[in-house]
Amino acid sequence: MEEVLTNPKAGFYINRDVFGAQGDFITSPEVSQMFGDMIGVWVMCAWEQMGRPEKVNLVELGPGRGTLLADLLRGVSKFKNFTESVHIHMVECSPVLRKLQYQTLKCEGEDGEKQIVSTMTGSPISWHATMEEVPTGLPTIIVAHEFYDALPVHQFQRASHGWHEKMIDVDENSSFHFVLSPRPTPATLYLMKRCKWAETEEIAKLSQIEICPRAMDLTQTIAKRIGSDGGAALIIDYGVNGIVSDSLQAIRKHKFVNILDNPGSADLSAYVDFTAIRHSAEEISENVTVHGPITQSQFLGSLGINFRVEALLENCTDEQADSLRTGYWRLVGEGEAPFWEGPDEQTPIGMGTRYLAMAIVNKEIGVPVPFK
Ligand code: SAH
Image 1 (cartoon, rainbow, N blue to C red):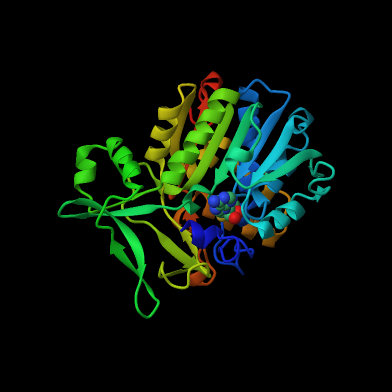
Image 2: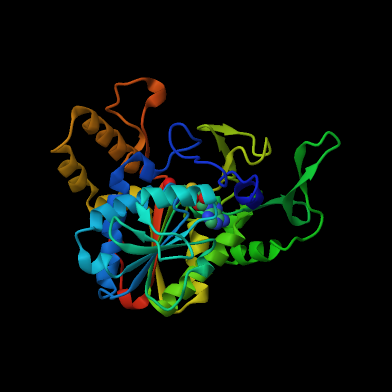
C-alpha cells in the first residue's frame, strides 16, 4: 500500500494532482472554503489555550493541494500576533503536490537560498518528507486531514490455528492474488498490541482484522512531541471508534475498483481506527490527553459553521449561494441532500457523520475547543 501510494517513480500521489472533479476523489477542503475557515478557528483557539506562545510550529500532514491551509491563512490573516508567531511546516512526499502547495500558498523564495515565505501572512514555510524531520523545541499545532487513511494497513484473517496475515502473491500470468502467510509476520506484534486494547467479545465476533502499525507509530511521534514541546494535534478522517475489520478500498476517477488492479493508478485508503490512536497516544506520553472522536458534523457545528455559512450567504451571487449550500451539506449533512433538485447522480452526499475528529493535546491546555 505504501509502495502503491508513495513509490518515488510510480506512486499514486507522486506524479499528479489527484483531487477534484477531474481527478480521482474530492476532499472537504476542495468541497468548500468553509472547511479551512473552521480549522483556522480551531487552530486559533488552540493557540489561545496554549497561552499565545510567541513562536509556534504549525504542521500539516499531507496537505494535498494546500487548499485547507490557504483558506485557514486567509481567515486568520488579520490576527497579527498569531501570524507573526507561526512557522509553517508541510509534511508531503509528492514533489508535484509540493509545487502546487507552493503556488496555492503564494510562496516566495527558493529552497536552500532564502527562507521560503507564504506571502498570504508573511509566515516562513518549510517542507519535510516525514513528521520526524520537523524541528523540535517549539510548541506545535498539528493538523492531519485525510492523512491517516493513506497509511499502509495489514489485514489478518482467522484460520483454524489463529490469525494469519494476508499477503499478496504473483501467479504464472503475472497477476496478483491474496494468500495467507503460514507463519507469524512482523505486523503480528502490532496485532497483539491492538487486541489488548479491545474487549475479548469484540475480537471473538471477527474473522478479519485490519491494523495500521504506521498510524500507531505516527501517533506516538505526535504524542511525544506534543507532550514535550507543548501544543495540540487535530486528526480528521473517516473511520470508526473501534477495531476495523476489512475496509481497504481502491478509488479511481470517483469509482471503486479492485484493490489489486493496476497498482499506482488508483487511490488506496482504509478506515482509521480511532481507538488505536487514543491508546497509542496514552501509552507513550503521560503529558497528553486525548479527546473525541466526535463527528465532523458536531465538530464543525460547535465551531460555528452555521454562522459562517450565513455570513457568506449574505454577500454572494445565486451561483455561489448554491455552491455554499451544497458544500455545507457535504461537510455536515448525513446521506443525500433532501433539498437537491439537480441530476440524481450529482446529489450531494453528506460526510458529517462518516468523518470523525480527534484531538491530542498537552495536559496544560485542558480540554480543547470544541471537545468540551
Ligand atoms: N489533506 C489533503 C490531502 C489528502 S490526500 C486534503 O484533505 O485535501 C493525502 C495527502 O498525504 C497527499 O498530499 C499525499 O501526497 C500525502 N501523503 C500520503 N502518504 C504520505 C506519506 N507517507 N508521507 C508524506 N505524505 C503523504
